[in-house]
Image 1 (cartoon, rainbow, N blue to C red):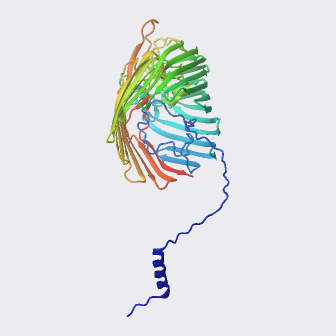
Image 2 (image 1 turned 180 degrees about the vertical axis):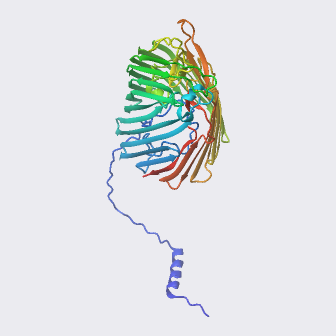
Image 3 (image 1 turned 135 degrees about the vertical axis):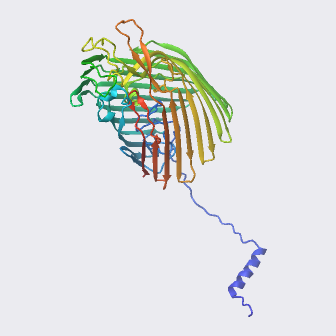
Length: 632
């Protein structure tokens, strides 16, 4: 069949041939009026803003929780979380996160940005954490104190925490940034004793923080003001425990409330002399006032239960004591002027630390401050510091943040550094692996630590003098602090890190410290002699993150102090009480269904190991939370 060329096909071929011989381009001129518009520029603030925590974070390590799974924390950190506005913009204004774990553990966290503009933000948040756990008393096996506890030595530990807050910031273009926070926290929990279910405690906290930061030419500075109100409720509890239908133990606890007010102010300024030289100063002022109080304890008992082989004889017929707590007020002013020099590999900061003490907190001090960071290559760094550490005020609020079961009767004062030296080395990374080594040595003026304290013979200052000393004072063995003057602070450790692409990360660390009455690590409340920790994070597929952790705190103990009366000038006798090894295997996982919604879970102490948090208070066993989070 002959081919047929259609007319328009042929025409296209002719046009193509002509186009190959001449140019088809044509110059066109377009006239258009363009009116430039000037927009007001706003400076991007890259310096950190005021941190707005939903809860008070513990600054000291403790063995109650073990290693937390970093993938799915109890408190939501999803942007825009309550902590602070991030320089990384988020398309979401709010978040909610909720989890539950049997028998009863519940955690809920939520936050919302009421205002979200380039220069302003206003955030609100709330958080709830609650638990109820029944545990066997540590002394119930073979120890006479355990016989006093009902329900076969088991006691229920209840905790309810609620926190709400509002915070925000506003940037004045070309001037500075003003930020602030107002927060209220309520904590309700019970404090068991060795002879009863104990008494309930209420803690009310109210915090206000204001901050201003700005930069003028080569000078940048920040000013912060803070006020913290801490209230511990009054307690009056009477209880009677009956054994075998005819033996009774009666107790009275009458504890006055405690109030503490802390006012703080700080200034930090730095002037850039050149690209390499800076001069600056940090000034901090803190004032704490704590109310007086009086505590009364009384115990009346019959005989020990017949099933106690060693203690069938009569016990104390009556014992009681009372003691007063004086008003405490102290303040510290710290000034740290310094000169700082840096280049690509070395940073040196040298200055003077000046401490001016007021009230009941010791003498004034002047000492040198030095900090050196040397990074000769991308795979090696060494750093060290001398005395470059701020005062630990050891307020009641600080002590309860560290451990709520200890500290009601404590009239702690500030912990001042007499000497502090710290340093470390980082080797790597090489092919994803790195090694860390560190150590510190220092001496502090006074260190408050959990303790076991027994009543003296003759019971000096008691309601009923002349009674015999009880084998274990039923109240003074739980919830007590003691102060150790001129304490030596010392610790050392090493860590190995390895990252395999973005699929897995591993960290193995070990930290040690001496374990003597006046020597140890001030950051370790349980006086652990050795702490081994291993964490593994795995990201096998895109929506799944898994975290596995194992921590062993060995050599944990408390020291007890027992005055050797009646000789007033006899030395104190110290005893060591074991708290048991804390070994916790923890697991966490998160599955992200979308950028908005994910499901997560954490389980801690999977092996259900037993230890004491402090003397007389057992750990909570297997804990965790399983829940969901959503951003909107």
